Length: 269
Image (cartoon, rainbow, N blue to C red):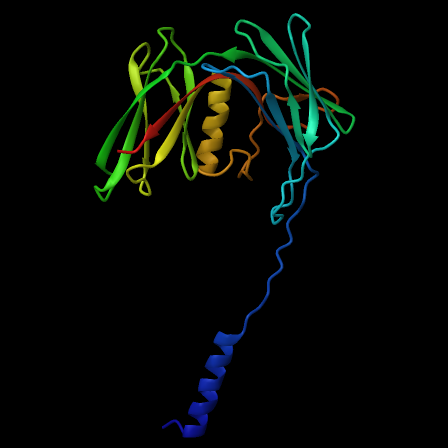
């Protein structure tokens, strides 16, 4: 039979095991920072604006909270006819021009010189259909009490069209679509948010995108889900369309593209 003294010593030992904490320092191998390019040029259907913004950052160590801006770069967009649009740095890593309204049936090129290396890409402006109306269902979701929203648009009659739809509420949600099964027909994007309530305003946006950008976003979405930024840390490196002509091995992340877009505002009923 266990004595009272032995029981006490055993209890102290068990408590000591549970109360000990060991701090483990995880050492991760850090690679050289890479340039990250967010270069989406837009043409708004209702109100075309000559103001365009390109954001440049660099990759950072895994545990860093801040995203370092890529400063002192030279950013230039020009078209196949030689028209040039220079982007000026207005804030760290934020480059802007106020003289660029893209046109259809024109090829555009971007040149970014950063730390004495030249990054290039080319794209054309992709058209988008108009957002038409919203259909609301108040009995959606697993609970049967969530609000579901369908945003309708009519696909272009030509095959092989691709779209990015954004739902702008408290958080940004996006979806990508191709017209494989809806070519030339009215179709919809589907969104659900359990925090929606009557009287709230929500915004929708549709962008025309290329097949290559669709594939790029498909991979990003598969790795990161539909929440969070598409340029957050990924399990594997996803290459965009930018090429480092100075040192091909030091490639950039991100994408250069041109998209027409349309917007629609809806009030929850």
